[in-house]
Length: 137
Image (cartoon, rainbow, N blue to C red):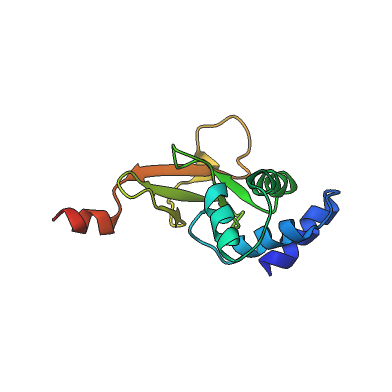
């Protein structure tokens, strides 16, 4: 479902659906790890797909502009990409660098102290994940 929607959004935004763009969309389809551009590039290269890192980077930018993918800024080292474009938060583990989704955010957006109507939000939470906490003990 994501793949078809993403490719349709590319077309509606006036972009051509090239083979490398299709491969990058496929790499994001069902991916909840919030991969970086380099992680996607490495994954596709390991699957014998041949193109430049610039192609991956530019395609991700195009996917963000078309609304097919969200750019996640939780990782201070690099941008990551999320095929889930619905409003939700992200938790960044400061020890292992894993980024995970946070859906159960209990914020009353209707009463948030903003001037205007909240249509979407992005929330980044930083800390140490449960696995890393267990590794310490």
